[in-house]
Length: 398
Image (cartoon, one colour):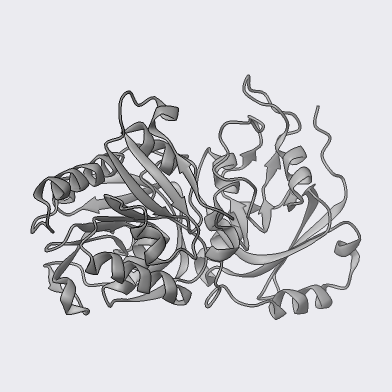
């Protein structure tokens, strides 16, 4: 049985709003950006998604922890979220896969949380006022004067301008083999995957389709990539402000200049947008949760997607345009959000390169966009067969 922490806790927002509850997970102080996620399930995948680094996650679903924590569903080596906010924390897990309770996992990982607060009211506030600086204070920290706590929250650096990918990336390169994920026979392709905060499901999906991945740190150079002679390059999801990713933007331009097929997800989409010459901007409260509707331009199909981003690419919807970096030819917005028309995908028409802002690996979430991994493999296969940069992009029908 899981015994929840009876210590008092406060969630303090940067505008001075205070919510009182009880401690959940580790006791102490944590600071970060308060954001909400609309997922009804998948809290373990959410917490272990490195894209949540330096963020305090507010779960809109009221009951959290019912299925405990297992040893299979983690999306990274740790919990990178700064803090966790729930309404009704499960007192004990009930699932055959559970190995421990969620609050035990939070304690073990040193994640400070709060339970027993009105997460619906908090979410409505963040939707109205936008994601903001926040802090969770529990135990002795919760007994400090509220004015001191508000001042401490306000003094922390903002998410805009934060460079975080280098803090969550792998320490050293590693290889993911297709044979370890059910593929029979020789690998179809080898790719270089730049880890900006990669989720474990992404290499698993590609490897199961016959791709051998060489996962490289966020600081990888073009020489590191070319030494592998890859059939393609992948840029992963990750945390922070894409405006700080100058090195990754320069690296991707070298990849595009060399005509190497490219696929990017989430932060990788934002880096792609910047490489093409578009700007990026911070959304008021972002898109977070596995229930985000997206329009696919080519097929006219609405896809329900899993998302986690607070920044977006500033590119025009509608007909293709010349990329601001004109050497890359024509570019179009391939996907956009049906909630607010935010850019959710980009593709070049004259080079083998595309990206999406959402998470086709669907961990956790729907499988509507899973065929994007197949589209990347098709692109690499056709490019290799042609022996030269192709003029059409097979991802357009994915």
